[in-house]
Length: 204
Image 1 (cartoon, rainbow, N blue to C red):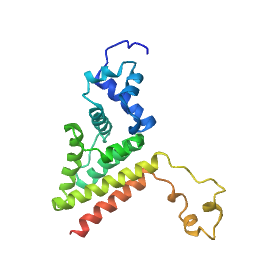
Image 2: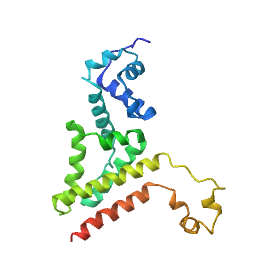
Image 3: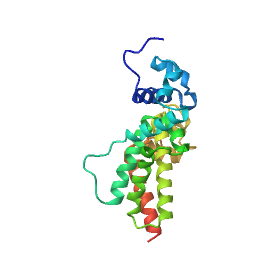
Image 4: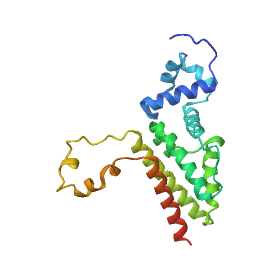
């Protein structure tokens, strides 16, 4: 193990942990592997985190913190919510191996919980009842996770695949064209709008 040139920091640990998760998935993360990646003994990590769960909490917070919003934000609630969830989808697509972790892990830190409170506060401006706000939030999060997962590594059907060559059997797929398999941000935005308008119009 090569000695480190400078003292280990909390940020170093989280950066290396996220890199490992990006490469191997969060189930593969261990204190031993993380120590090896950082060039330290696993015990050194306990100076910064009490256990592996605390590191996982830190990874959740780190991913949320990478969300980037436009410099000039819209004031209208639906447009602002759209920008929030586009930013969320974008960062999750950049770290697809964190999806299961983000979706299933309780938000145990103030930093990660802030990233839930913020969109909920914006959606609350819709005038929907609090319970409906929660359901709308849940729908948008689930859609963002699913879209990001597929968009992160979507293979394109080869030119000789049946869906491209058998027009009789796959007429609808051929008529739809590339839109069937292109999970782009433009379509994501459009569907976000449909979901939000659907909630507000059904309660109107």
